Amino acid sequence: MKILVVDDDAEIRELLKIFLESNGHTVVLIDKGAPVIKTVLNETFALVLLDVNLPDINGIELLEKIHKVDAELPVVMITAFKDAEKVITAFRAGAVDCLLKPLNFEYLKTSVLNRARR
Image (cartoon, rainbow, N blue to C red; front, side, top):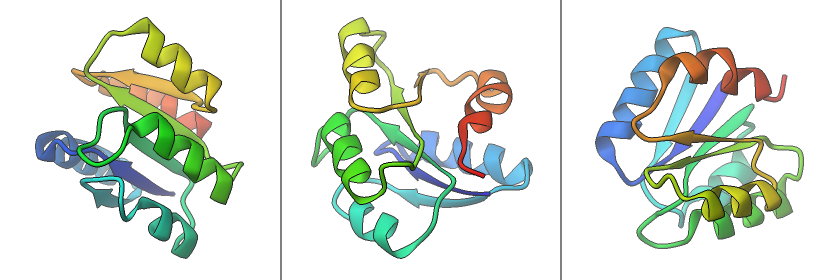
């Protein structure tokens, strides 16, 4: 399946790319929010992994914009902050799950990827 990864941390993007591609997925990487909506409009994704804190836009605001374009696209938020309020806000905005940094790749494989659109 095709997965969009949006994170400003190059190391996180690369780790996710390596992990996801080694599990047979196609990965598109973006480092800021600006090009995300155009990308979602022009390509079909099974899942989006989206950082809560991007340099140019709040990830939760971007989640809401993504769902205006494609309400059925599953979005999983990624955050370095174990901030319950941000996680709750993300779920209320339509996130299907939340990954905390440092990433738990076993959880990503066994739980998060199962939420992807087939």
